[in-house]
Length: 105
Image (cartoon, rainbow, N blue to C red; front, side, top):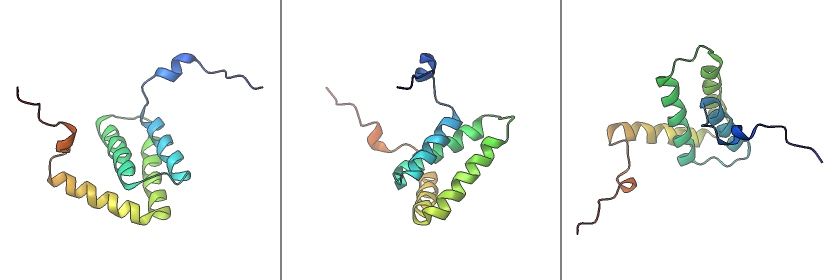
């Protein structure tokens, strides 16, 4: 039986952009990506790439490759993601049902 040689602290670390790209590819390869999930992951990854200055440009290449892979394998999903993203930029970025009004009492 194989033993796991990972450090237990690795299980509880905050995922970085590369981890999120790995998750995106795992879901894509398993045919588990939905429009909503694709949009959420891509927006998070895009935001992190915009906010951080990565000296290693390979992460940007992987992001571009991810978009290209999505376009090649799930064009309809990518088109819906882009349309939804554009639509959300004209509206509030946070859906109102995420923060319902507090009950008055």
